[in-house]
Image 1 (cartoon, rainbow, N blue to C red):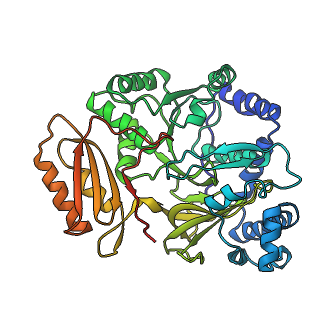
Image 2: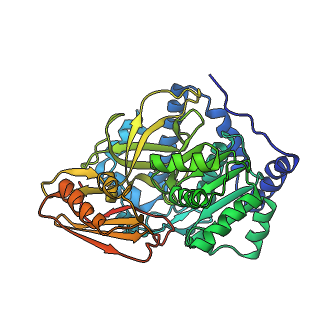
Image 3: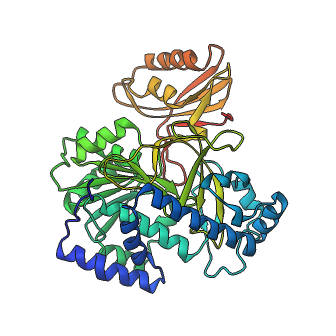
Length: 458
């Protein structure tokens, strides 16, 4: 058993993580510091102890929902569900799934009567379904603490220099003078993922070399794009002292991991979550995707909402037990994944996610009804000569559009190869439109999606 990497900190980093950031959280009335310390203890509990802890927390969480949240008062009464009768985590399956549509229709009824300090938040809407919901300081504190814990697994800490490549309007719109000063003190530099022109990419590479960050944080597509650009310019970035690249918010493809690791000369740490569902899982140096199990219960369900065993793919459903003021109970994330029953070599007792396969809209449907991951189409386009960028949109089972940004060695013969390859996978009678465009912008959230399907895959 290993207890993870020691956090190598400069005197300034130590001051930031033990004085400045705790003071910042105290002013905001967050208890993330105490939570992080508690999480760093509980991660080493046995799986059995963690399971007992989660079950008791779940009973308390559901009891509050049953007595203070109008929506769940009525729902539990209608299905005769009593939290006191909860015997195992599997008993959650008696509760109907929570959807974005349900939240939109019942936003006020989902607020606990004893809630204080609720603030509205929004998802980026990259799924086509933007959502407004409400969080309190308890939930925010948990997410900060869970991310902080996972950061320290890799030998870096708050106050170590970091470069963040991000594009969410929420974050970019919040760069007022107070936040600017805070980021400067915490040695955090933001590079906008929306602005990746050739000239800006040159500036990004120069900024990373000048900043010499200990860690990177951003979308895998954005970091891989910067890495490819640096490589094409003959600008090495593996000598600036980067210890780890944290990636999140998109599926991490193997070739992206390889590109980031090769160019920046550091390991890549994947994490999974969302503004709505919270920080669900983070990768440790031993390769395990550990769930934030003390606060979050993850189920993988089939099309009828039935929980599936480890090793079986299905939709990821989340119950976040730090959302008592606005409960997320069996919340449908729209993501497809697989649970893992093995124990991680790092020795942590936290439950694991084996695989995150992507969003339900990342899956495509052939004319004969066969469902396949969008990677089946990505592989048709990805390595073709002269294709600088691409996006595939399945409009219907009979029509798919492919958008290409042509590179300097592009040959129009590529268009025919794409049509043949797509038809081989989707069906010979599918109409394949290939359009050459000047650029392919990211989603409103700043994320980049290679495949979008408008066909229900389930």
